[in-house]
Length: 307
Length: 307
Image (cartoon, rainbow over all chains, first blue to last red):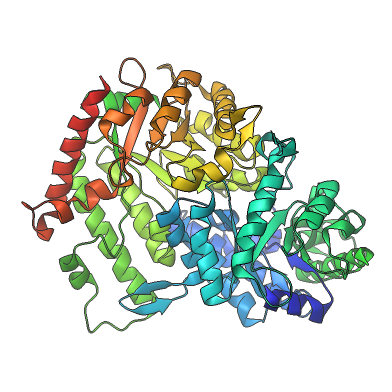
């Protein structure tokens, strides 16, 4: 978490770009390049073509933003839907971003009972085979689901401490139906305050040196009032904030998610950056990566309203 | 769900075997066979060796149980920790079990906002590339996390209806700390009753023909009283019950999870079956698959206490 904070301070930019490509987002010239019309449509050939296409798309975006944006957050579902080849594209994307000096937040939302969570924690902890340790996933952070309670979280906390990595635990998510469970009243308060309280408590087990824990919280940008309240209740918890841009929130809405120094928070935008070329009249689809840079700069400026 | 019920009735056995191999469970002769001492320990060679070992281990168990056990439930975390090669072993295991006529419950516990859940739903819905549809994952069911509410669930329900597949939504999990969130009181009742109520309601959107919905619930065997209460509250919801055996519950504890005809429920055992050779004095580690069959027969007999 300290490294993420340093990187944000260095770039004066609390932004993370969600690298969530879909066949609808990737420009058609890239689709034509990788999915040739005369291709034999076998499962492996097709998914490999998509995997290479997604990596190429991501690589061009990373090349255009790595000097102004501190982190990426690839959403693994977008890759997982193309099987193992898709997952290779996810891992290659994480790896490439790290080579370019970016912080990688793997949006995997895993959560399970203790022995299984131990296996999932290998995403940030690595995996030992015959006494040799391997980092198969190349992530610095992952997102985690709290529904199973602390024994599904503890292996991740241990990994955070052992490897100086981090997690973000779902607290109040950005989607409309997050209310179904998260807003149910417990002791007169919504459930997500209880989650917040647990996340804070768990976070004390893995404090960084800059006032924030390695255990952060996912708090949706689409609920600004709740964001302010959670910021007050969780002074040592760093926020990962999805829901900016395409999901509706703007920089003005987000002031309250930050601490008094404009820190403590990183805001994600996915489609608003990677599909920016679709709404940018000055850019053709060939300029998709340049359009992404432009959108990232505009977002950085918009977030200056936090001060 | 109807197919699962038929298969359970045919075999008179409401058991699912959790194929969750670890390097600690796989017998040492298999480890020596696949992880040769003079191997070059590259990331790919090592993870490929483990993937092949896990698949071989699983295949031998499947070969020894497919005629008496209706379903397998591989836990994807056990494979995911070995990167893409591990995930190939997961998919190959699912595929092989289907070839042998078994039902496959992918224990993936995914859950995300709508657009992302749509991608995760490809696990059971398939993925379309250039108008061709592929089934990369080979699962019949998957497990899903409810923390994000209905818009994370709806794409799975649609997939269930479109492809005649099913899901099990985490309701009351088997682990000790499931109480952290799931037992918090909402309107004087534990939260998991609210989850149960949502799961029931969502289930009405995907009813099968045998009285049960394609949308099932995960209800831990380690909480028998809660199981009885949930059975009463969810008459049309089929239960997937983890926590038998190694986690502590026995057949006697589980009577209340079944309906009055001894149906409506499938019980999972993982280590109790696949690592049975370790506690079976009549079996050497070479007989691990025969020991698994013996343990599966004993479990079937134990579960007859449901009547």
